[in-house]
Amino acid sequence: MTNTVTKGEFALSDEEMASFRKNGFFGPFQVYEVEEMVATWNRERLAMLDRSHAAYPDSAALDGNTNIANYDRHLDMDFLADHISRPEIVDRVNSVLGPDVLCWRTEFFPKYPGDEGTDWHQADTFANASGTPQILWPEETNGYGGTITVWTAFTESNEHTGCLQFIPGTQEEMMYDETKRMEYSPDTINSVAKGGVQRGFFGYDYRQLQKDPDWEPDESQAAAMVMRPGEAIMFWSTLMHASLPHDGSTEQMRLGFAGRYVPTAVRVYPDTTEIEEYGGKVSLDRYGAVLVSGTDSFGHNTLATQTTRGRPFTTR
Image (tube, rainbow, N blue to C red; front, side):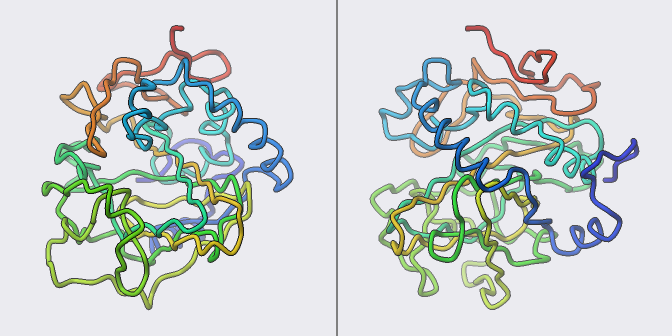
């Protein structure tokens, strides 16, 4: 898919677009100055503690479903609402997806000293935990799927703190069957070594979805995505990606914030009223996708009401 409208200031050049098509990712690129990001997050981390207007209830966090509980905080935090719509991000996403784009989910990815790395994985429909697709592309795209993820480093992300890893060029073939179900086993967190590296998937084992149980990712081709605070990287969710463990050499946590983007033609959470993951469920009653650029002529999805600044706004 290509952008057919006037390119924004941060749109990918022809050479950058060719590299993205080949490798499945672009970046890192700067969204904030390092000092700006550090100061901003030192302030915003306190605001994050106020969950009174969060999309998903406090009970999800209390029940241990902290992954779900911290989805979509852009719906109640002004800084994150502005972040997902920044031109440094949206212009580049438009280069790949076209002018009419939704941000359908955001997630925090913290990694504390001693935490395991994340399993090698790919995501197409995001049915990996529930067995039910969370996004569906139109049939005419002939199997085209996935989402564009923009992962921003809010803290230092390097080989010591647990940076992302990519295997370039692996975005075109899915090695996993997302119609299978993974067994949720939180007791296995930080206890399983895979290929000599301690890895897991937030209480799941992504190997359970492999089409070929004997297949292993070629880690010799893996590249570490080292990022300073305020830098971001854009990639297809179908690209083989993982993260390294936090080796504990510093007390600083690694924190990434991921925004996930799709064209407005894609159906989000089709035929469901809840998210089922990590051993629990949360209602989508307060959820809405955010139109970050263009128009929505399809009407497939519930949208968060927009203010004139482009921020999502929910009734409080």
